Image (tube, rainbow, N blue to C red):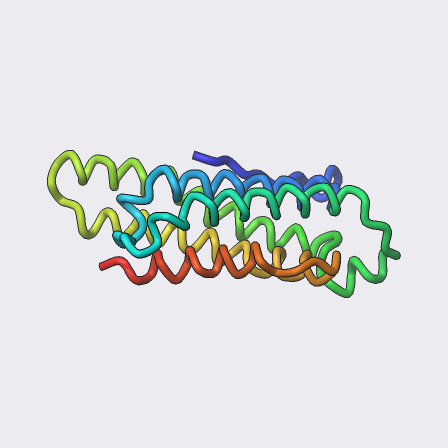
Length: 168
């Protein structure tokens, strides 16, 4: 499972933190793909498009990571988007908290599959993943607007959130 930590205020580097957030999103998308039978509703209509959509999202995130490291904007603009200092750190601490719930929830879900107690524990796992995706929303949306790139990856992530919520 993907780990995500936030540096102390003294060691915090906005660009590196944002790249780490994007790396987490890539790992999380990969984990959702690996555990799709546990997390996502059966999607026979979408089966052909799923691998391509996941690959496109990963490519878009990689491009966004490159742009984060090279974009030149005055510090005030970073502040306007909440992408600097304690404002960003706080958002990322929420992401870290939400993400830390995934591994234990996944372990419980896998145990439930083995024990035949699926619904409750699988729902807990889905909620943990869904919560982490939701926590990523703010910084990701601000980042795409700040850099001026299309929001395809935001829409893909939100689509995954919807699918996670539709599983019974």
